[in-house]
Image (tube, rainbow, N blue to C red; front, side, top):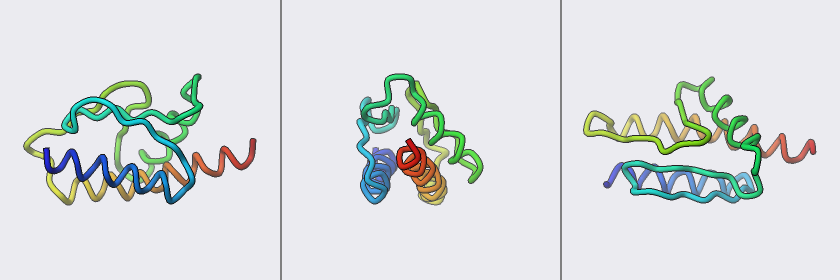
Length: 96
């Protein structure tokens, strides 16, 4: 739960830094992250593709899963990658 909450808090803070609104649902160990105003999942797919270039796989349309094997370093890697994803979504939104 602690690592899941750290991931959730970090994602919320990262999205806010880029001026993006997120909805996070599910238990903290099984987060689902959705972008507001993203009915066709275009923002989610942009986010996930950009984060993947930094080594973290986020799912654009489904819950994700943390387990006991994940570490604080893993969460930090995911948050660093998420920042790249948020930047890509912010750029996409600015270009629209």
